[in-house]
Image (tube, rainbow, N blue to C red):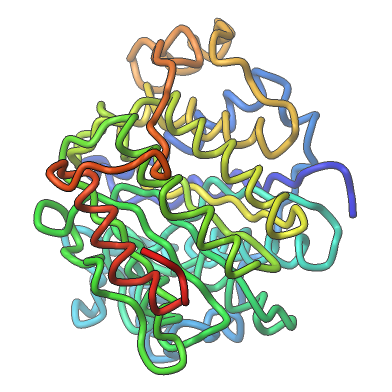
Length: 389
């Protein structure tokens, strides 16, 4: 296995552009890669531009009629069929949408292939993590579901146990749906409660079906949850599940929209806590998955202040070259930010927080809303896996 991580990147991914008024501004991708380069992290990894996912790969998850509908809208956005979720407010049709969506998916699939084949231990595609797309439709700014495609490719290559951990503020509904009845895949999602946020799914009682019963785990966090609660929930659920499941590969999704500055959601997590979960995910991959780790991006709509810093930390951790949170951001990158956005970029790689949390093993408060959320998850899902609540 190579000692160097792979970073999947092709400049063309910035063509994933729903238009000027859409919150998913592709500048967040360009600025993240710019910050990676400003810190020299591109020299600490192997930067790889993979091919776009072809139709046979896309059909591992998506229906052929849906892929055809995306192709048609890509060629003529006016012909978008809203029955497939394309041409909507969330997912406007745009010229070339099939090609760039397939390119992003191709990066995640290639990352999974490289990790499975031992070409690298860790592979990062921060342009991916588009976890809402369903087999037959677009949803939530997502055209093709690259995390699900990466997992499906791992299964096709012979993997028998793949764990997916999603810490985006929104429920990882599309990935859960793709493997709802598949015992080879464990999906774990920590997200804002469905009562207060799209897609209104991800209740603790959603635990899978058939042979996959117990294979879906959902932690529905109260709006307003901050660093201590978010980290407490993660550590109260994820390590124990991974210790039991013993995945051959760990796939994680690191949407940056849990941040307190994000305009589309209601959690209050800091950059420093996001970094702590990234570091924990890295450690868990080494502890339970022989170091095989595929790390993806996801949501994140504070496109200057939050997303580039968060995912640059992700790249640094995967490269075994973590960026110290107190590090001053190079002025060259801040100049790039101003040139692209006319905004002032952040000065350091921290929000000035020192994340800490109380371990679940030290006891819980049944009157606390965060602890109630964790308890609901453990009571719904853990007994199905033979684990104590």
